[in-house]
Length: 187
Image (cartoon, rainbow, N blue to C red; front, side, top):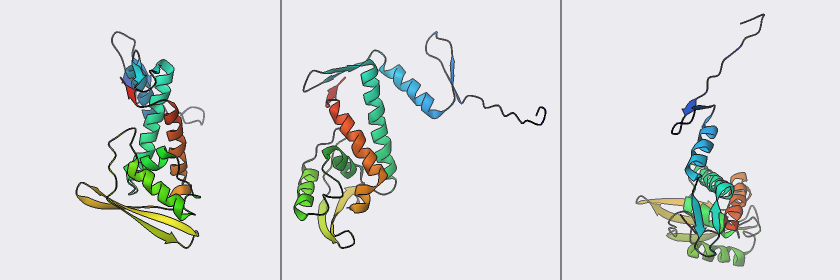
C-alpha cells in the first residue's frame, strides 16, 4: 500500500518452456491452451480425403480452435443432460431451427437425417427411439429422443427451446464453419 493505493500483484499461472527456448509465463488457461495448440500444430499438415486440400499453419490452427470450441459447447450442453450425438447431428446437418418444428413433414425429414447422420468427430450412435409429440404452446411439434449410454436410458427433447437456445445457435454456427474446412481429414 502506497499513498492510499492498494497494489495487488498477480503472478502468472503457468511457466512454459520448449527445448532450449527461454521460458514464457502465461496468465490464464486460455493462453496455455493456445500455446499448447500452436506448439502441437507447428509443422503439422492435414490432408482432406475427398479433395486433397491441405490444411497447415494458420488455417489448421483456426480449424483446430473451431473444433475445440465446438466440443466445449457440446460438453457444456451435455452437462445439462442433452445427448452429444443428437446435438452434433442437429448442428452439422444444419436443418434444425424453430421453423422445422412447425410442420410435421419437416420434423419427419429431420428425424430421417438424425437416423442417417454420420458424425464428423465421434462415433455416432443412433438413438434407440424417437417419438413425435404435439407442442401446443408453440403450435408445432417436438421430438422426444431416447438413447442408451452406459446401459442407462437417456431422454432428450428436441423442441422450440432447444432450437432458439444461444448454445444451439452457436453450435450450428461453429458447425457450418467446420464443414467449410473440408473434413474428413487425415494427419
